[in-house]
Image (cartoon, rainbow, N blue to C red; front, side, top):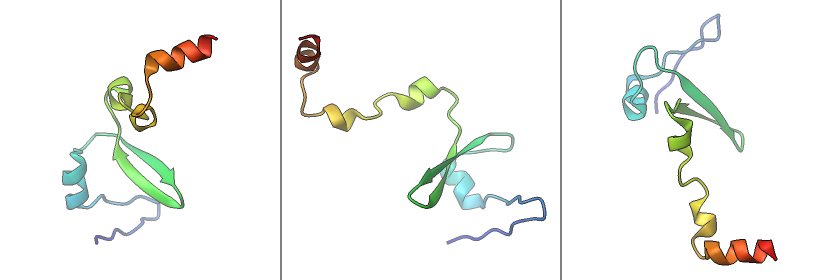
Length: 74
């Protein structure tokens, strides 16, 4: 587990291991996601459409899309 000190301007240095795992470099942007009392740091996607592709796929794994659309139309 790594630690970081918060400066008087509320800045921290992202530890080397975290930078390597996230593949972030100087000048890159990061996104903060808040999940059940945790803060998750993620690299900001360059393309949000590509980043979102497949999101929620597990919801549809046992469903037939054509069948669903037909039911909604009725």
